[in-house]
Image (cartoon, rainbow, N blue to C red; front, side, top):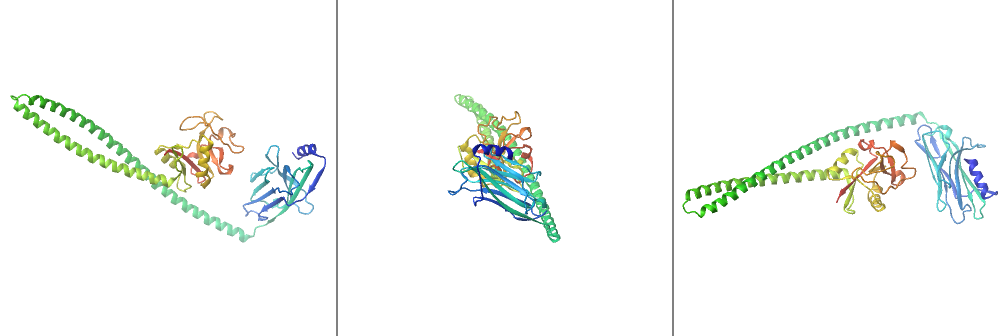
Length: 422
C-alpha cells in the first residue's frame, strides 16, 4: 500500500519538502503502562490546520512503531488516505480498535487502541502526514512519542485480584436481587392477567343480563299493549286486574335487575381504573416518553438492571404500541434529539427486518417497506446473520444492522423504542 501511495504522490510533484511542525501531534494515553494490568492504551495522531499551516491538502496519515528508541526501526501499523477514507491496518491481534478520518476542511486524525498491551508494544510511535502545499508540491510532516512498559509488582497483582473478588461478590448480590425482583414482577403480571380474564367474564355476564333485560322490556311492551286493549272493554275487569298484577310484578323484577346491573357496572369500572393505574405505573417504571409528535408518542426503555426487553415490549404492546417505525428524516431528528442522545444505552432497536429477503427491509407491525434508512459507515451489508436494525451510539446514532435474538435476551446496553398513539 505504501508503494502504491508513493506512486500516486509522484504524479503531483517530484519535490519532497519534509518538516516537523506543531500542527501534527501524536499522543499516547497513558504514556506509561503496566503489563497485564493496564486495560488499554490509546495512540492518536492529530493534524490541525491554521492560517500558517504549510500542508493545505492531506492525502495520507500513517502511524508506525519501533520497539527500540535508539536507532529506531519503524514498522507501519495503520494508515488512511483521502482517496477512500478507509483505515488500513497491519496489526496481528484481535484486541485492537482502529479509527481515522481525513478532513481537508477541519481536523484529520488516525488512532488505535491496544487492549492489555504486551511488553513488545512499548517503544517509539511515529506519525507521518503527507500531502500538498499551496504550490502543489509534496509536503511531509512527522512527529513521534515514546510509550514505556512497566512489569507489575506482586502487591499490585494481589490488590487487583482482591478488587475483582469484591466486584464479583457485589455482582452476585445484584443478580440475586434482580432475580427476586423479576419473580415479583412475574407474579404481578400473572395477577393482572387473571384480573383481566375475570373482568372479561363479568362483562360477558353483563351482556347476557342486558339481553335478558331487553327480553323483559319486550314482554312489558306487549303487556302494556294488552292492558290498553283490555281497558277499552268494561266487561273484562278480571282480565284487567290480572294484567295489572303481571305488569307490577315485571316492573319490580325489572327495577331489581337494573339496580343489580348498576352495582356490577360500578364495581367493574372501579376495577378497570385500578388495572389502568397499575399498568400506567409499570409503564412509567420501564419507559421514558416524549411529548406528542404527529399524533404519536415515542417511549424508550429505561436502562434498568431489572427490565428485560421482552417485558418492556409486553407493556408497549399492551398499550397498543409497537417497535417504532421511523420513516422520515424529520421523525428521526425528533427521536434522536428527545430520546437517543439522552439515553445511556449503546443500541436502540427500532422496527425493521430483512429476514424474508436479504436487503429488503420491512416493518414488523405495518408490513410496509422502510422508506428511510440512514445507515452508519460500513453498516447494512452484514448478510444473513443480522436481520434487525438499531440506532448505534458508536455510529453517532445512525443505523446499524444487528442480530434479532437479542430482542429476547437480558442486556443492559440495549434499548427499545416503542411507538404509541398519543
